[in-house]
Image 1 (cartoon, rainbow, N blue to C red):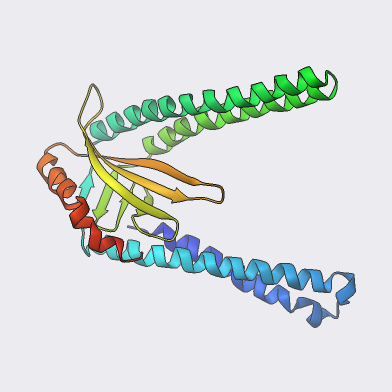
Image 2 (spheres, helix red, strand yellow; image 1 turned 180 degrees about the vertical axis):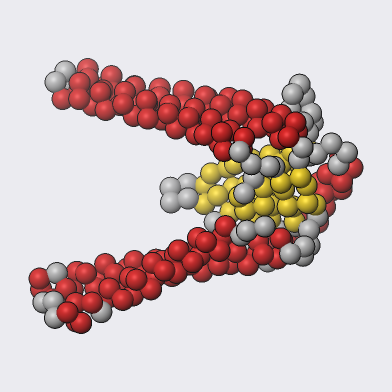
Length: 250
């Protein structure tokens, strides 16, 4: 099983080395510092430091994913039949669109309210603001309803697989660590089967972004015949079981 986090770490490492070389490029080629040499060195230094931090971030994730894929502390390794995977992909598409619909209505309402407000204050300049806000609502609609469909198309071309460990989940080609610099697992609960949706384990995550803390739910479907195994995993993530793991860092 390939480790995608290693690819990200190697790419960031390459950028770090390239930016580090550009720091000294003005001196090597005799570029005058006042004619862009100092600026190039300063920007390169900032990029090199940022890329080095990103390299460390992904390298730690890659090491954690390697341990999971090598079978260390694996709670479950599930593969899905084509029928199970298609049922999950279809139900997940509907769930994501339903969640995004409410968020898009809120954002679109705010954008249109501001656009109409400025248009009332100034019919000429406000008309430009209103046009920008209408365009922004269309962009948000494309992201909210287009991205889930792109994920569905990507899932149609792969076989579903999940690796679940006490410190992270590798599912659908994406690694989700439970306790890293920017994310933390809040709780794990059970979503029963209903209609065409198969039962799922739901991992409630929070992520630290530049502007706020965002919540997200990772739904991992439970294959046929693995219900008891899934319930045992759910019990292992009870607060008293997760408390020691929260003191460790991925």
